[in-house]
Image (cartoon, rainbow, N blue to C red; front, side, top):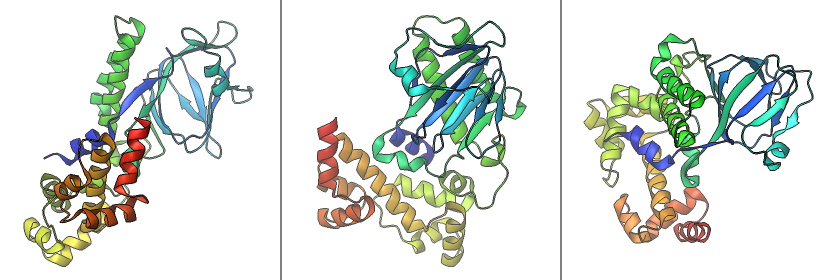
Length: 312
């Protein structure tokens, strides 16, 4: 059982490209609102700046890849003094082909851009897995696996064949998975931080990782702190303290969160009745499951299932 693969399967990440890309020359700028989306930028050619309120301008160079959670608005520009175009208006104009910005022929840039779409039921599982911004410089040698994906993207972008946009989107999805499973200390601009906790940190810990894998392998088991500690070969107090320090929550809280995530996925897809979902994740009755689910999610299992069916 691979808990990280479980996570990816629940998130269902899909990359949606912003049209066919952006070409710009001379002085130009385009601004994007704070919508909480997870965007990606890949600068195929040229240089530009990424500007966010209260942050230093971030220079981007040819080949750089950026993963950005839009909790803040941001601007891509050749010059921070340029009045930027509003991206919402630009998209609404439905310009055919690639979006073209600026005037003249000097300082040409070409970039691909888009956002990741996730299963809305469990998108909150991403919280804490990524910093607000990840920049992968084109010259970073320790990220060779990721750069192999970016090289394939560049090749397809420069000489697109049939289904080129589909191929680029799939490569971007693989790039996200590669970034998610990197230790935070290997991400450019990030430092080793003992407070960095979560599922991926837990999986890299020999004690917490063994417990997490056991819970994912048999989520319906009546796990307790004692039984998990015995499985890991440490005392109860040592296990509980270490698990919380590494993962950020207690073992039983983690188990509850994962059970609820599985339940949201099953209920949202309409593949099982509430009682079946309850028993499959370790609840002895539908009423006990409904109580726990309502407390964690803020609505009953039936309400979530009905809302999912309404908007399917």
